[in-house]
Image 1 (cartoon, rainbow, N blue to C red):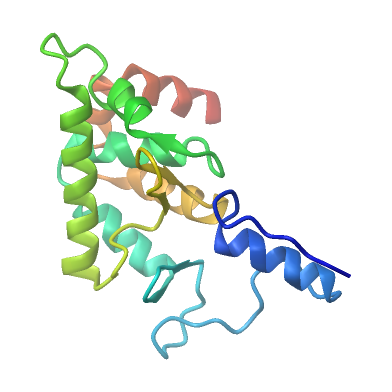
Image 2 (spheres, helix red, strand yellow; image 1 turned 120 degrees about the horizontal axis):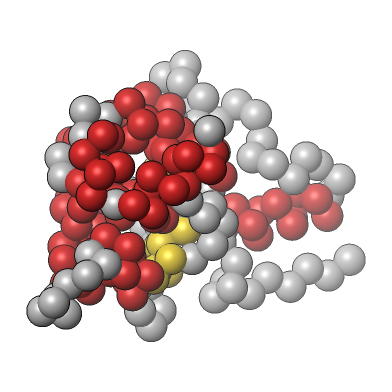
Length: 180
């Protein structure tokens, strides 16, 4: 059997799922991947060019709790509301700063994402910064795995800023009501 994987189109997790399936193994992440030698089961693993970072539920909760503005929460929400799909800076800008008269939405969305990544690096010790796949070729884009998206969205709902997020972002309110 020959397997062809296009690294520009497939994430590491997708490629490994194909390889595992080809060998007759469970296509999902193999059991027993734990975070930093603890007993915490990894929810998602990020494979950077020089590191592997495993995220568990507690890390995801802590990361969301570090987000201090509604713009940051809105950016995380937008990435997570379509798990498995790439979300680029233009889509983030349109969601995070929908009516920006000075057309600085992309700059503000990028700043929110950068703060989110810096918090992950500094406070959680994640070399990748955020629990999302990042596509760097061309324009930056982000993709959330379904388990990560579910946990992040649930934790945002528990955030002290959630009610304000619903007031400031009608799209978040609409999706939250549709999910209820």
